[in-house]
Structure formats: C-alpha cells, structure tokens
Length: 209
Image 1 (cartoon, helix red, strand yellow):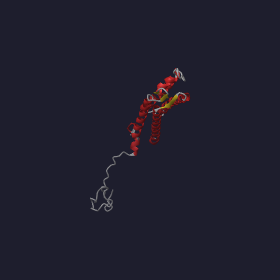
Image 2 (cartoon, helix red, strand yellow; image 1 turned 60 degrees about the horizontal axis):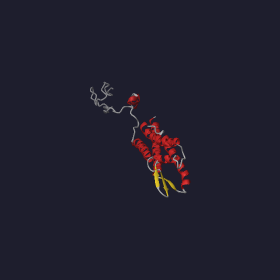
Image 3 (tube, helix red, strand yellow; image 1 turned 120 degrees about the vertical axis):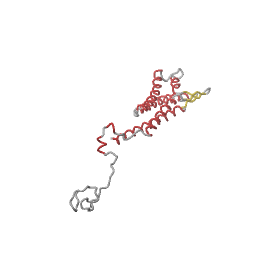
Image 4 (cartoon, one colour; image 1 turned 120 degrees about the horizontal axis):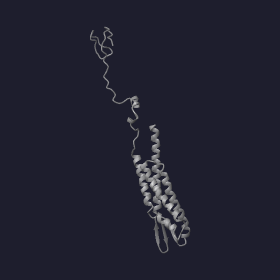
C-alpha cells in the first residue's frame, strides 16, 4: 500500500509513514490467529477412512441387546418351570413344558404322536437360540421369528390343555402355571427390545445419510 500524503510505499502494518511521518489512516491490521478447526471443504476432501462416525453405539443399543439376551435366558428357564398343574382327587402334580408334551403322547392321553411332540419342543428351543443369536449378530429383525416360534409352541400346548380340561372336569382340574406367564413376558420384552433397536438403526441411518 502507499502513503496518502507522500505517495511512498509503506507496509500494511505500519502505523506511520517512514518517509513523511504521517499517520497511516488505514492503521495496522489486527492480528488474527488461524482457526485450528478444519474447513468444511477440507473435511469433504479427506479420504473416507479418516471420517469420524456420526453416531456411536450408545446406552440404548447396549440395554437393548442386554434385554434381548435376558429375554432369551428367561424363555429358556420358563421351559423348565411348572407349566401345567393337574389337581385330582388323589394327587396333584406339576408338569414343565417338555413333561406336558410327554403327557400328551402317553397312554392315558395320547393327543399327539412322538414326532409332533418333538417338533413342538424343537420350536421352543429354536426360538430361544434364534433370539440369543440375533443379539450377537445384530440381526434384530430375525429375533421376531424366534418370538413367533416360542408363541407357536405355547399356543399348541394351551390348545391341548383346553381340550384336556373338558375331560378333566369329571375327575380333576388342569391349570396353567408360572412357566407359561414367564415365557409370554420374555417374548414381550424381546419383541420390544428388537423393535426399539430396529427403529434406532433406521433413524440413525437416515440422519447419517
């Protein structure tokens, strides 16, 4: 730049002209530290390997997976809890999930065959395995299939129980016990956890796009 009084070239940061001593009307430019933050253009130009993720797994993901694992464990335990209680004139006895299937194909009842009892029992075990595996593989939608298998096995036993109840009224009573309720609670917890995790994944994927 040049002095407006004498026309000599002066530095932009000079307060006075070194030739005529006049004051530099523009004045020295204030010092501004460089912004340490990278510009938006620099961020976009960076390779994809250096991009920072917009979201990281939070407490919702951890709690959701934990709830699914707890639900799977609870469903497994429920299979060995008393599902059905028979109360007769001479004795009373509780039956767990698999014992009731054995009862249904016994000589006294024989509502189902051995093959059908095996398939129903396999449904319950497969449902528990699928629910637990989905938490480790992050495939939460498939967890609903495990829930459906558990409900199918429970529904089959309840339908058989209702049939037996009509005959049992003459010599005793048959009632559902805690095992059935515990399994339903486990299925509800797992389905809710899977729904929350699926919704969160879908929402975060939209925001990150």
